[in-house]
Image (tube, rainbow, N blue to C red; front, side, top):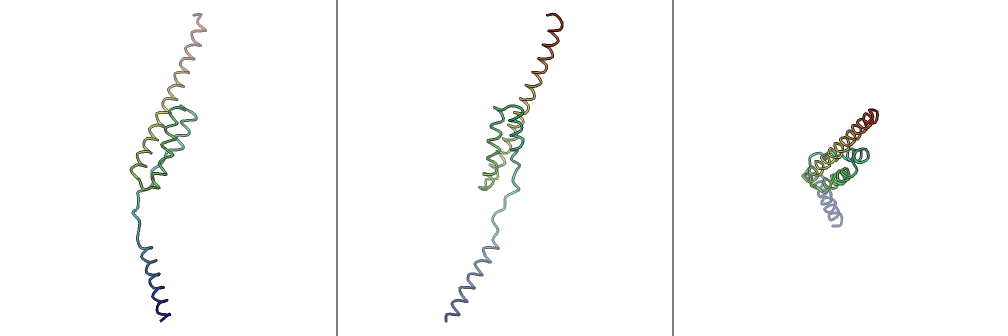
Length: 113
């Protein structure tokens, strides 16, 4: 009787393990790119005030994806990308205006004005 109960318990445990292995969790699409590198680079080299939101959004992508919120991860990844481009564009435009201002300033100082 003891061997039979052990066999039943062992069979039940094996069956339970097989059922647990065969069940597939709902699979999410691949994790979207978080654009963290672009956010950091645009913050450091272009425009810090506009790069900070890019870093904040980029850091939220992985945690939302890990929680199973794929649409939220995709949305924050898009926001991180947008803020990175805004920071980069603003920084580059500011640098361009600065260099143009310097060229005009040098040109005017040499002309006697």
